[in-house]
Length: 507
Image (cartoon, rainbow, N blue to C red):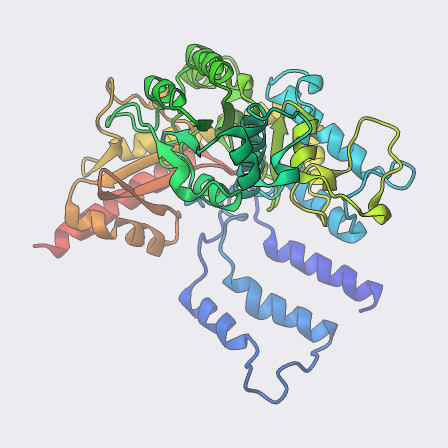
């Protein structure tokens, strides 16, 4: 394609994706658009199956056939089904730069590219933004793909640390001698992951790093507060002989948005127990940790309390493609010592990948999963430079206000109930709602089809979940497009119409 063709194509993409302020793109494509897109895919039985269309025809195919079948995740402020943030315009521009210049950020080469230094600057800025302390307190810091990649890093580092603390020879590590041999030498018969309502990626990570999904043990505080970690139960588990432990804290839990710890007292106690019993504390702060950026107002006091003390952990994961509103995929990982990341992930015997490093920045290939790495730090850097702490704080506040407006809209409709119904005290929207709202219809028949009915209306999008063994509807607000007035009106109108239609159908 000529440069003029490329410029025209880029304008068409932008015009196609653009949504005017205050407008909302459909949350889902129509079934006709999905059918058309499927029919346009190449037929493996055709004689011209792998014949080239050429750039111009291929671009037309993409825009005319494929793009209309995408969902509205990035283009609608009402796409609330998953914690999937939209993309801020500055982040989109930065991501386009990433593609245009195609930097493989694997080796720190300060005389050849600034990329790894930009990555390190972004990570340091995130630490300050989230009030987690100085960069020197978090020597191990890197970008990865998201929750699964970050939790793999957290459990791998935890596995390394809890075994190394029991090995006689300091030079030995799991990364060098292997999990089975290291456990045998350390006298460890089991490694367990203690959590309350950990994200599903935690179990996947446990499988990947050799601990097994069965190693993840749920220790809920009570039936009424299953998201909260039972610290007394944690202490009992830590006392088991020949067992090493990783404590995994959800901040917050994916169904309710609630936090596994209630404040600094919980975290101080867990820190004491971890030090006493040589355990590792890993915090999955994918979206909940951003509550630390909310302004110091009374309406956010409970969220600030729940986040207090999280910095006492040994490792912490964050998802940039959630509340920070940068493109997929974007995960961030912090841990106290860079040496433990290097013990697990170093890339030995590859002279052609050696660094000419004269600073404290390690080559990313030695501290993370991937050797081939997209420059995913640049959109994060761009958002931090563009918005600053005040702009990001205001964006987080809009999300919380919108989630609470949705909860109030649900509460105003008699046929629905906010969840969880049981708890240590009455449900308070101002205290209990962060960015996730869980609810169900009171009528069981309606409740079974509620998610489908909402999504078929194509005004707002939700995901189905389960609570107390019954279907539930989960709403997650994570877009910079959040609008609390529009959200309240849309949800109230939609739920009222669904209730009326359901009742009329039963007459």
